[in-house]
Image (cartoon, rainbow, N blue to C red; front, side):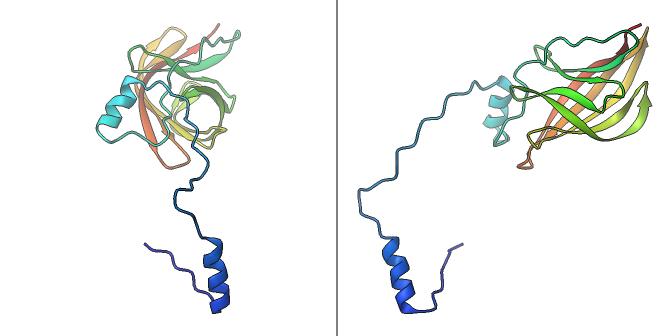
Length: 178
C-alpha cells in the first residue's frame, strides 16, 4: 500500500516536500543494541517452526514456595515441563492469583469463572494481569487426596495484548491446610 498526501495548493505541497528533504549519507541516530535475553528450549523449538510469538510469555522460572494458613485452601499449578515449575497459585475465595508470565511474577485479578465446582474453585477461570495479558486456566479434576484433589490434565492459556496465545500444559493440586 502506498501513502499519498493530497495538498490543496501547490505552495503547500512544495513546502511539505522541502521539509522532508534528506542528504545522502546522513543517517538517523545509531540504534542501541538490545540486551540479550536467554531463549528457552521451548521458545527455540517454536521459533524453528516459525511459531514463536513476538513477545514471549513462557515462564522461565517458578513463582517460589507458597504457603497456606490454617483452614485455608489453595490451587497450585505446575508447568508440565522439564523441570516442572510452580507457575500458578490461587487462595480460595481471594478473587486473584499469583502467576508467572515470562520472567515476571504478577498478581492477576479474577475476571470470570465457570465450568464445574472443584472444592472451593471452578474448573474454568479467567484472570487479568497488570500487563494487559488475559490468563485462562482450565483443568480436569483427578484423583481425590486427603485434604485435596489432584489435577492431572489442564492448561494455562496466556493471551498477550498483541493477540498472541501461548498454551502451557499444567498439572496440579487443590489442597487445604487443617
